[in-house]
Length: 530
Ligand code: G4P
Image (cartoon, rainbow, N blue to C red; front, side, top):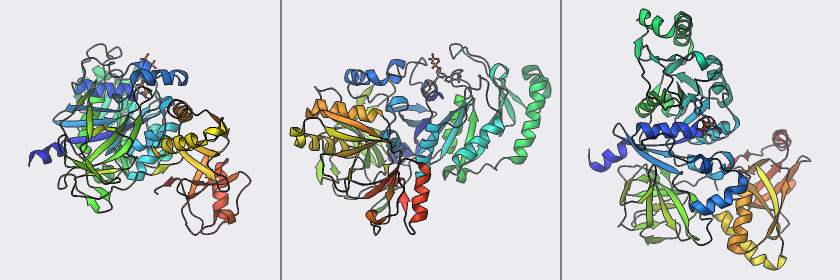
C-alpha cells in the first residue's frame, strides 16, 4: 500500500448529531482526551462560547472573528486519523448544521438516556438518511436515572425508522448504575464513579460465567435482571449485520456516561472497527474514487466574518479524493479559474494551523475572495467534473423582508442576493412582486439576526422583518404543473425561489397531504436538488 492509500485508509470523518444538552460537547471532549489531543477534559470549548444567548451573539462573533476552531476537530487514535465535524445546536442551529452532514462519512448520534429521541436529533437524522450514511448511537448519562433500555431502543426504532442492535447493555442506571455488559465478549465492564471525570476510574472486566465475582461486584439483584435481559436480547434483537450498519439501516447502540469517562473508549473502538474510510462519491463524471483519483473537494459551508475590519470569508471544503498540497494549483470548476488555494487551514483540537498537505476525508478551510458558493467543486487543473450539489433544505421560519429606506433599493437587492447566494439564508418571491418585497426562509431563527446585522454592517441597509406563520415548505418537483392552477388550501401560499422553481408554503402540516390528494399527479419534496 502506498502512502496516499494508507493515509486515506486510516481516515474516519464523522459528524455528531444530538439534541442540545444530550452530551455532544462532553463526548467530543472525551474523544479528544482518549486521542491525547488534549490533556484535560473540559478545555475544548469554553462554555461561554458554546452557549451564548442570542443577544450577545454578535458581540461574540465579532470577538472571535471567524469561529473555525469549533467547526472541525482532528485527532489520532489507535493509528486512525479522526475528523469530527461539529453540528451547531442551540441558537446556532441553521442550514449549515444540515450541510455539515453532507461532508461526513458517518454520524454519531448522542441520546440522553432519560429522554430518548428528541426533536433536533430527529431532524438531523432525517438528513443523514438522505445519504444512507452509517449511524452509531451512544446513549449517554446512564449515571442518571434512565428510561427502560428496551423502551429506549423501541423509541429509536419507532421514531427514526432504523433498526437497532445493542453492542453492549447497561446494568441499572442512576445510583444503581453498575456498568455495561459487552455482548460480543459476554463480559461485564464495571462502572466506577469518577466524580465527573475528575478522578481516575478503574474498570474491571468480568466474564458472565464468573458468577461469583459478578455477585461481589454488582450484587444479586442486578445480576438476576441482567441474566434475564441477556436472554431476551439474544433471542429478540436484530442479528448484527455489518453491511446493514454501513448502509445506514441498522444502528449499533452503545451505553455509557460521557461525563464520567465511562463507555467512551469502548464506543470509540467499536466505531473505528465498523466505520468506513472515505469512499467513492458521485459526480457528473461518475463515481470518483478517493484513492485512484487526484485531488478533488467540494465546499459545504461558507462562513462570513462578522468583524467589519475583516470582510473575508472562509470556505470549508471536504477533500473527497487524493491529496491536497499547498504549493499546487487547483481548478475551481464553477468559475473555471486555476489557482492556488489561499491560506489553507486545518483545524486541530485547540488551534488552527496552516497546512501543507491533507488527504481525502480531511476538511480544510480556505480564504474565499467572494468567488465560491456552497456545493462548488475543486479538482486538478486538467479536470472539470462537478460533485453532486448540496440539497437546499426546507426552511422552517419565514419572514417578509422590506428595506426601511426605499432609496437604497440597489444595495438592498445586491446585499440580500449575495447573502442568499452564500447560503446564509434562502430567499423567495411571490409570483407577482418584484425584488423590493422578499420572503426570507431560515432553518434557525438566528439566521434572521445575521441577515439584519450583515445588511446593515456590510451594505448599510436597514430592514424590517415581519414574521410569517408558515412552517412547512414543499418544492413542486413536477415541472409541468402550473402552480397557479393547483387546487390549494386556505393556509397555502405559492412562491418561487431565485431560480424560478415553484414552491408551496403551509401553516398546517396536514394541508400538505390535502393538496396532494386534491391534485392528481402532483409531487412535492422537502429538499431541492436544483
Ligand atoms: P451538548 O453539547 O449536547 O449540548 O451537551 P453538553 O456536553 O454540554 O452537556 C450538557 C450537560 O449534561 C452538561 O451539564 C454536562 O456536564 C452534562 N452531561 C454530559 N454528559 C453527562 C453524563 O454522562 N452524565 C451526567 N450526569 N451529565 C452529563 P451542565 O450542568 O449543563 O454543565 P456543567 O455545569 O456540568 O458543565
